[in-house]
Length: 103
Image (cartoon, rainbow, N blue to C red):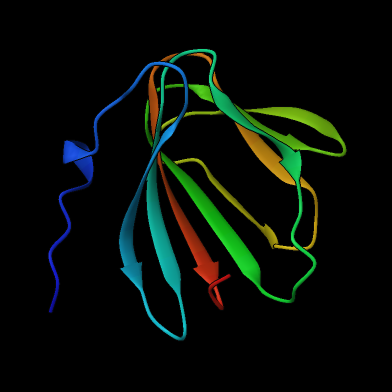
C-alpha cells in the first residue's frame, strides 16, 4: 500500500510542478500543479494507451483539436494518448494525470 499526499505538491513560478505519484508496469500517475497562465500545450504521444486527466482544484481549460473546454474541480478528460491534448490554467490549478500503460 502507498499513500500519496497530492496537496503537498507545491505551485512554482516559471513552469508547472510535476510530481510522480506512482509508476508500475501498468500505470503512471502524476500530480501537476500550474500557476495561473501555465499549462501544457497541445501534444500527443505516438504510442497506444489512454490518458485520464482530472482537475482537483482551480479552474482551467482542456485543450483539443476542437478548441478549449472549461475545466474545474472534478472535471475529467479521457482520451487515447495518441490524440492531441493539453491543459491551461486560468487560476492556480492542481490536476491528477493517469497514463496506462505508462510512457
